[in-house]
Structures are given as C-alpha cells and as structure tokens.
Length: 170
Image (tube, rainbow, N blue to C red; front, side, top):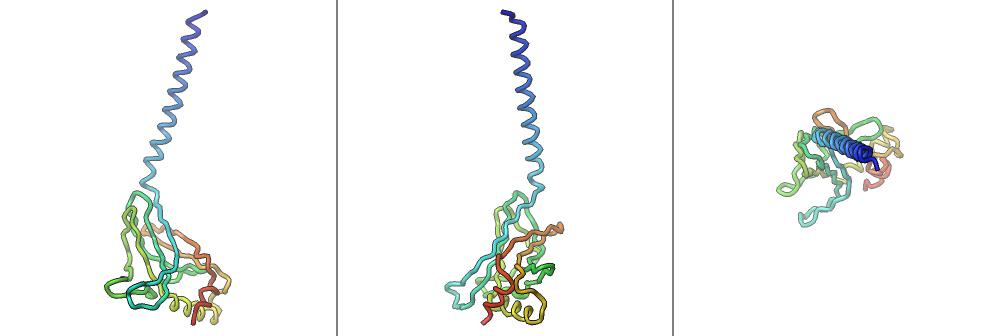
C-alpha cells in the first residue's frame, strides 16, 4: 500500500471540507450583517368590540407590529383603494382613558405593536357616499398601507371590497 497516496488523498479531503465550511461561515456572516438592515412589519386588520366601556360601537382594528430587530418609525397608516390612499387619522375612534388615537410619527420598537381603531359606521358611511358619487368601484379591494420614515410602503389586503364596507352603513 502506498501511504503517500493515502495521506495525500486524506489531506485533500480535509482541505475540501475546510473550504466548504469556511464558505458556509461567510454566507452566514453576511446574512447576519444584513439582518439589522431589513425592516419587518406585520399588519393585521380585524374587528373589535369594546367591552366594559359603555360603548356600543363596532370597530375595525389596524395593528402594526415590528417583528424585526431594529426600531422602525411609522409615519402614517392609510386605507388604500385602487391608486388612492385615504387619510384615516381623523376617523380614529377614541374613548378618553381607554383608547387613545394614534398621532404620527410613531416609533415602533422590536416586538412591539400599535393599534388604530376606526368606527365601523364612519368607514361604512364614507364608502357608501364615495360609491354614490362614483369615486370608487364597489368591487375594488381595500388594503391597509403603512409608510415609514424611509419612504417604505407596506401593504396588507383587508380581503373586503369597497362595496362590502359600504353595505355595513345603517
């Protein structure tokens, strides 16, 4: 048996494995370096009913949470219908001492969430009037649009059409 050939092959295998492990370590290091640069915003849209506040309003709750590892400053939250972004700051529902309206900009720390509450009837009447005045098509899906201070736009579909919002008007 030729031991020189054996040890040469053994060394080549070791060198190859070492190079492969080094390449994997470089990829992981670059990924970890870029991680703080990535913004991770989660947006949810759901119904809410205030309990124990002597309020009979049905509400929509828009929640924006930061699941990244760096703080993010939210500059505004909109309802997006087609190509139009609707300012909803004045439509916020508030109950003194319980539910405070959001004022922008809002700094969102990692693992934190902010909520914006909208009165269902205010939104329904707005969309009902907008459909009557031909501002929107009733089949257009409404989305939530969130902007941050770096001009980043983040969207979430409500899965509700403008017409379905308008039908809730009583």
